[in-house]
Length: 249
Image (cartoon, rainbow, N blue to C red):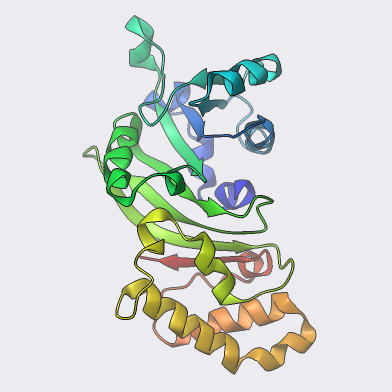
């Protein structure tokens, strides 16, 4: 997902105009160790060497154990959906351009999702982005909402991205267990997400013969067949070969 983010909106990562100059990226709920925050910072610095990345955790022990790894452009803070941005006069100058929240909202009840989204939107600059979703522990299979902060303090759904490393193999149904919180409980006949997976399974079944050339080829051709059935799918071959299927909303 780090690499996807770099490809999806590189301009947002690089922006240095007005309030974006001092804005940061939030890695919300980085987990037991700070490795995801450190890896994200390392990858993003290739595009913006001065971009600050802040790892946020609700567990004081996790924050304390991560602090020795902090540096000039990486830090760790205790907090939740309201982010512990700087306080006092300095708070005016600290804003967020991107939020990454993985395997966080999955732990909450569905009714809590919208209020969490609203709290996070308050700190994000107009045009900012949030990628929020779920993956397996090793990040081999996952899906996420891609959301844009508009002028009002609210989010606009932009896309859903499905990501696979093709390990152990490709199957559309494998993503169903790793849908974002707002989608996983809607996997019932008649819903848009259920219809999407029904169409993708059909596309994968109809193109299964291409698997002889490998799962990456099968994944790409099934996405192209899915697009032919009317879904707005990003058909960039470089993205599909990386295992990213982007469904625009």
